[in-house]
Amino acid sequence: MRQILSVLVIFCAVHGWGQACVWKAHPVWPDTLGHAVLDYENCANGIPLVPSCQWDNGDTSLDTDSLTVGAHHVVIFDNSVPQDTVYFEIEQLAWDLNQNVFVYAGAITVEIWAELPYCASMFNGYNCHVYGDSTVIHLLQDGIAMDSITPVDICATLAYWDWLPFGHTYQTYLVDRSACGSTAYGEAVVSFALDAEIEYWAEPSTGSNDGMITVTDILAAPGMLSPPPMPLSGGLMLYTWPDEVAPVGPPQPGTTATWTDLAPGDYLVVFTPDVLCNSVDTVITVGSFTGVDDREGTVSERRVWPVPATDVLFWSGGALEHVWVTDLQGRTVLEGKRTSHLDIAGLVPGSYLVHFGDGGRRSFVKD
Image 1 (cartoon, rainbow, N blue to C red):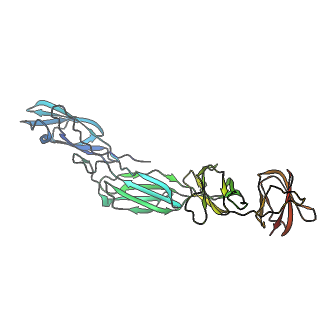
Image 2 (tube, rainbow, N blue to C red):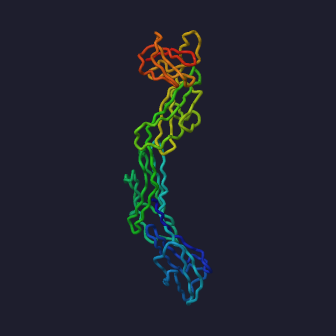
Image 3 (tube, rainbow, N blue to C red):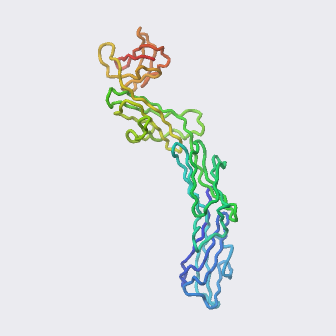
């Protein structure tokens, strides 16, 4: 829970006197009582001949303790005659941790800017003293302190932690061991460890820039530690590999994407989730098409790859209702329905024909 601490503020608006006659010391959480001092010399009309005052809590001395948080006033007298009333406020002060948690260079970064309001004010102060060398900021990982910084400057303390792993909850925690005994928490931020696979198919180029890569889904692995919320959402980017200098085309939101007009070569596909989570990537090769014509003498516009094939056989034109593979003796050795590719890892190395339900066939070699 984030605690809110109050800060000293000078109330300058008065009736008649027109100056900041009240110096205030605000409580820093968890203290809830403030302090105030009446300064006659700062009043516009000068010091009364026989000065006296009365605070709204009944005190008649120039300074008063035990002021609760909220609005207050003090009446100024000259020789027992009321001259004016000064209104002011005692505030409840709190440390502001200004915590940010984000992904940078493939890891979690926690950044914090800590400060206490009115730290440099002349007319406001703290009812209890805050000492930097008694104040510590802890970085909590899953509720356990893994690092700390001290002293803490009450006006401005900037700190950050880099290269933190995914799959944990991060939070900052400040504790003041001096007179105030104040504490403050940053927001607990959950990061997720994503174990996923990019499902895709790639269409080779015929020799010019007409290759294509299509990502069909991002498949999360079962049994992940600290899995992100499902279904996954995010965006996909394509880079040439291995240089990764500039993206190929604009980013594409979602878990599916298609890039066309690609030259032969290697490409890196990167999926970045919307949640605070590590990205996943894979290298995809766009090959050069060298397919064999249909055995019946006609030319099929459908292409198959890779050449030779090893584990998976792809083809152009999208998914088909029925696809089957025969050996050179015409025996059916593999079938697939409603598919965009075939798993041929179980085939014996050799030459085969793949038949398409919409007509045509192509030869391929299983390596």
